Length: 91
Image (cartoon, rainbow, N blue to C red; front, side, top):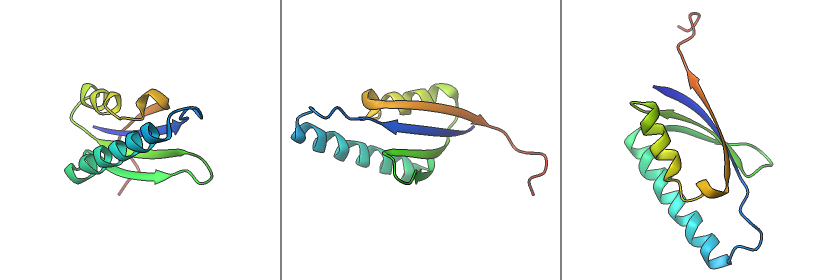
């Protein structure tokens, strides 16, 4: 199942800098592991924002939910999920 997911990150300005750096490092490692597995198929930064649009290719709604809830930055995100279906004009 394919999903387009927009993630807007808003880390609190008063978060301890060491905690911020550690959370961002865990986020990067986790996302790269999912990219290598093929579940996180694409990721694009939205220019000028601390945001991205990603394409996930996962087996179920539940798996996507699990992935998103385990993102280290999830507590600081607004997430918008759009399920995708094949377009009849696609070649």
